[in-house]
Each structure stands twice: as C-alpha cells, then as structure tokens.
Image 1 (cartoon, one colour):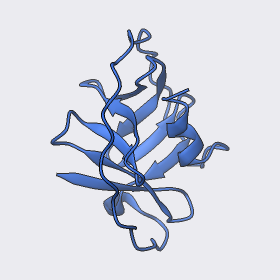
Image 2: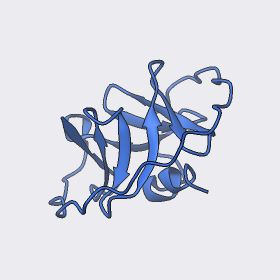
Image 3: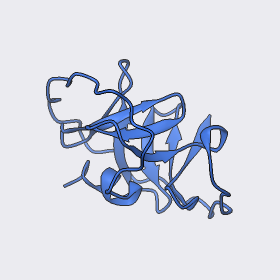
Image 4: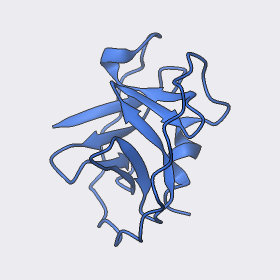
Length: 121
C-alpha cells in the first residue's frame, strides 16, 4: 500500500510504501527515509528526521512538514508518475529516538523535500 505525501502547498513530494519496509521514496524513485515502529522517521544515514503520525509528517520540534491526503487542509495537486524504485541503501545505526515534542498546529520552516533529503546526506 502506498500513501502520497504532500508539502504544505498541496504538492505531492514523496510517498510511503508500507509494503516495502515503510520506506519513503521521492517520485524519482530515490529512497530517502523509513518509518520505525515508534512512528519516528529516520534517514538511511541514521539521523532521526522527525515523526509521521496520524497522517502528518512533523519535524523534530513538532511543526508540520507535510501530510497525506486524508489529513490535508489544502487543495492537493495530481501526483506524478512514479519512477522505478532505486535500491535502498544500507541503514546506518539509528540515533537514539528523541522525546516527542508537543505537536504544533503551525507549518515548519523547512519544506518536505528538504526535510526528506536530509535522510540521504
């Protein structure tokens, strides 16, 4: 099952493939992050990026970075055609999970594409 993720403007940026290890992919097929059992989002570089819970992607401070279609509060644009998936990199050792902050209603200053790209740097 795949779930499209939109940025705060309603632009489709990535998707979560729940059948492929809860991996987040960009539309060009690049695997950038994955979701662990505690709803923490980790990059393949081992860094915790934030959380994905109840359809909202949140940064480490609790601000909204993106969302799925069910949680959307803006009009969304059509999703592009998915490219072939690239091979997932080996997961680096994960950082210790951070304490969840209080969820904020405001949007993060970081955009979803930049947020997810931090998982491959």
